[in-house]
Length: 162
Image (cartoon, rainbow, N blue to C red):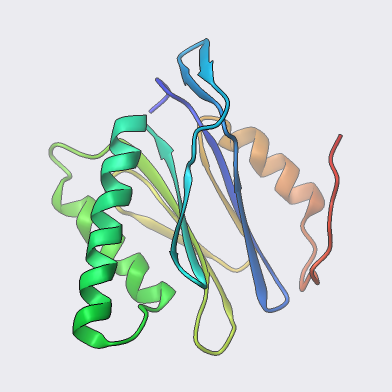
């Protein structure tokens, strides 16, 4: 999990969610690039962030995009964040003996506009929260930042951390 490294955070607000990640692509201590996409848009109101091994991140993202296209064709609607979270958990759990080395963070709004966030480990054990979730190699540091900045029912505001 720490070979490529990552930092991922998702927070809820008053009828909104936010998800953020770093852009570093590296091999342990060596930085190879600073434009690595780690957050993927699944629907207009659903995003997934993947922290972990870069090759597995891309594989999982492509599998999920394919599944969502098939879901839209079959159901003629977008998937809910809760159902998507269950699908991701099941997909990771069925590969538990040869897992994808990713820690997913899911952030989205349901049909009523309620925020939903979930973080998982490599075998799909979820951690749904009402406030914030973190993942990746810097999760301990991100947890401290979230605990100090998070306020209940935050409105859409812009924070600048320097």
